[in-house]
Length: 208
Image 1: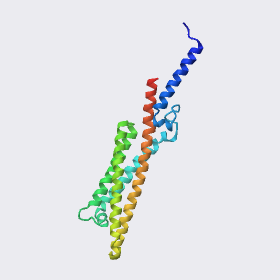
Image 2 (image 1 turned 180 degrees about the horizontal axis):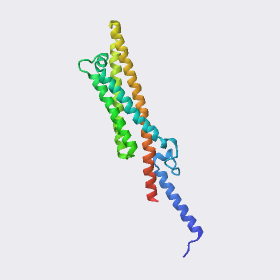
Image 3 (image 1 turned 90 degrees about the vertical axis):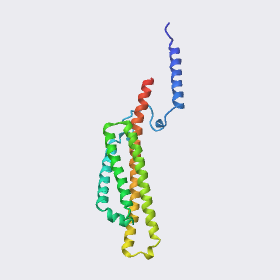
Image 4 (image 1 turned 135 degrees about the vertical axis):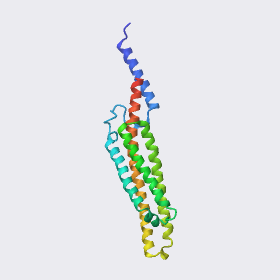
């Protein structure tokens, strides 16, 4: 028996109401910014951050390599500046952090070229640990410099210059941590708005 147009309209409206109620109760936080109707590759500028991610990856490798080379070639002066010539603590810690930055940059290049979601998650974890290491190193540098400034009246001119350089080194490390955090946010936004949105839309298409 053919259905009347009224029955079809009633059923379609009920389906829309059920789908809207399900989407309102279980709507992903992602759709608070991106509506389900827009295409995931062109809905906004955040989805097109691929060139920026590549630039960030090569920038991390380049800057990390330059700074690591400087640490390796001037490690003795660097430790004397931070008053750790015997233990070589500051040069070793800085070299380890810079090696982490280079490794994270290389991993990001691989992730960006292969578009592997699991590798992206690994990169985000590694980058978070590298950022915390940079912050810890900056706090250590500035803290040691501030302690040495307490005896500024007893410090000779050459030692006072070294204290100033150590303080500037700590401040630049803080600046590097801020820049690294910004790059981390950019990469995380790219991961979320491209891969997570793609998974959500594919899942919705399968359900329909």
